[in-house]
Structures are given as C-alpha cells and as structure tokens.
Length: 160
Length: 110
Image: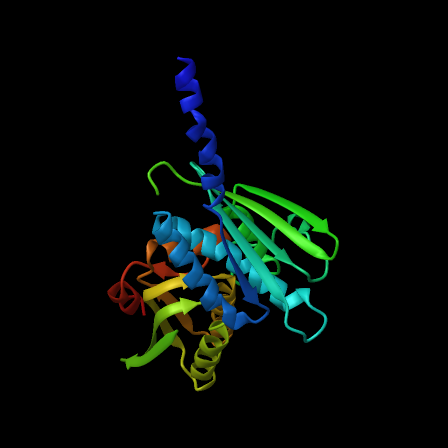
C-alpha cells in the first residue's frame, strides 16, 4: 500500500500539466484587431473542444470590452497591448483582460435604459450591459497602471 | 463583412455576410443611410449569412430604425441565426424591433 502511495506521485505531476491549459495572446490597440480576437478564440475553442455557442458568447464579451478600451481607454496615439488569457476548467472558462489604459471599472457602469419603444431607447453602455449578461462572474482590479478584469463563464452541461 | 444590395418591388434588401462589429458597422451605417437619403422607405435586412453581431451593429440598426420612422418608412429584420437573435434578446431590442423568421415574411409585411 505504501508503495502505491509513492506510486501516486504522478497525481502531483498533473498540476503543472493543468497550468499548460492556459491560452494567452496580445492584441494591439486598434479596432482591426477584432479579427485577431476572433481567430484566436476559434483556435482556442477547437483546441479545447468548446462549443460554437460558448465561443460566440466569449467572443462577444471580449469584443465589447476590447472595443470599449480602444474607444475610451487611451489618451495618447501610441500603440498599446491588450493581453487576453483564457483558462478552461471543468465547468467554466476563466478570462482575463489586462490593459494599461485609464482606470475603468465596468462593474460600475449602469445598465442602459432599453425602453419598449424605438424612440425612447437610449443605448449608452449597451456593450458593457451585454458583456455582464453573458458572464457569470466579474472581478475588477487596478494594479499599478493596469486594469485587470477577471471574468468567469460557466459551461452549460449540454455544451463542450 | 459583405453587404449585397437588391431591390425588389420598391423594397431595398440588404443581405449581410460575415461579422457585424465595431470594425464593420460604420460601412453598414453608410450603406443604410445612403439608401434612406436616396428616398428608400421600405428596407429589409437579411441576417441569414451573418455569423456575428456586437452592440456596434445593434446601434446601427436602432439608428436606422429611428431615421426611417421619421420618414414614415419601415425596416424589417429577417432570417437571424440563433446566436445573433440572442444578442438582440439580451439587449432587449427584440421587444420593439420587427424581427421575422424568413425573407418571405419580411416581404409580405409591406
């Protein structure tokens, strides 16, 4: 039995392997990088066997955040890098977006007034509203000169 | 994203192919508003081959709907894929925008 326990060492070796499931990429601060975002997510989805619906929803949430960062985050014309890290787990995907733009906490953005008529509908903050609806957990931190946003998206049982 | 424009018995049809996001929404907005300023009053947007839409795309649709209403015209949205329709639903836009299942339904409504 004792020997078996020693033989159990490979159990521990699984942890560093788990860490390899991380998938990271960087986007430049230009809206044309949305194509890169899409391509990276398709590769990520295929690599980990995730459903098209899940990838669509992750793509949309990251698109809204990325577009927001590009539209309002930078006060200079320099090129910036936006880092995206995806970590698939058993029943969820963890997403992290980092940028060095002005401090912005999307959690504080109020839901838009989507009225029941075309005339009254005002859509400021719509993208962030959609992102929040798609994600199950959102956590914002300002770390030094960086915005760090950690998101979690649950994988539905009939997916993956 | 590709936009194919067609005209059928006084109705302007816009067939979208690809992805409607903040990168492509401006071109779509220009195309729609060109048609409106040229006097088109009945518009159909065909979503059959559209794989993706973000809030930037929803904004253009909303803006065009407001503009066409001011001209006493109408816009119909048809043949959305499930994922795309879900975005309209999350935004709450499905409650006041005319979304129908098929191109036939859209054309018959005029």
